[in-house]
Image (cartoon, rainbow, N blue to C red; front, side):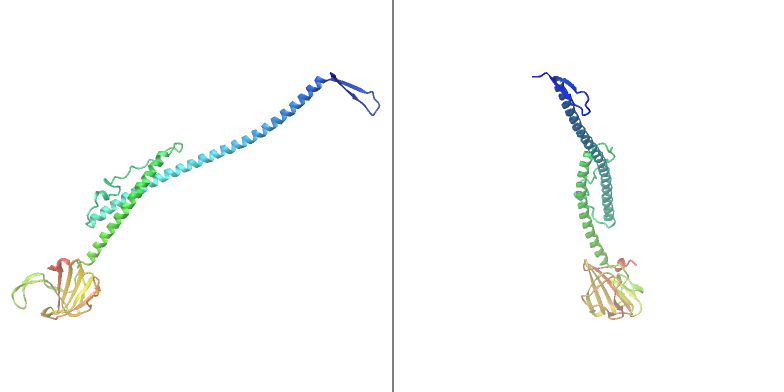
Length: 308
């Protein structure tokens, strides 16, 4: 095998022919160097492209991390805000509970049982949450406590709703009772005879007067002193024309010596409605109203039920 390679250079201008001789080893070495250079350049370019992609990816990851950190910070701020709202909600529930207790005292209602308290037996509210944490700190403990207190507040709100429902029923019952309790003067005029023992103007003997007498002109309006239903309207001998109103709860009022009754049996009346006119019917010394109040069938002093 030849150890050298000769190169002959010819020219069109007729100049002297030039010949170069290069050892084969050198030629192989040059070829290897060229191949290595090309390979190095190719690898370097490939690595450069990978590096560019990696830098771009790292920049995107860094941006994503910054966005996530900002989002986490916002979420922790929201968690702290929710914690404040939970504390405020708890205060409102406690205030409502205290308000209900005041209403029960004012309305003379029985206090709630121990197991009906807002937060169960003992009635103690959970400790306030502590939302003042650094945003860089983890909030898992606060979130667990928030979930726990939200469950407790949900139970407490159900208790409060049920308790207010019971309170409303009691107040409605009392309202109906008050509306059905005689509380106003049945008519205008002068009280000529009071409840209790007196000397009868007809017999001159001592007798028990079951109501009060109020005198005025004939035709003076007679008012229902409470809500109720007319249970009697007609004549009762010496009592003359009589109107009886059943108010429920064992309470009845009776209006006697009327000139005219304006309501019929079964009609509903409300406190202040005109139900009759004053007269002089029956055994009477002049125009007046004989007014009686009965509680569970027993006559009671009507004056104690006149509040105006």
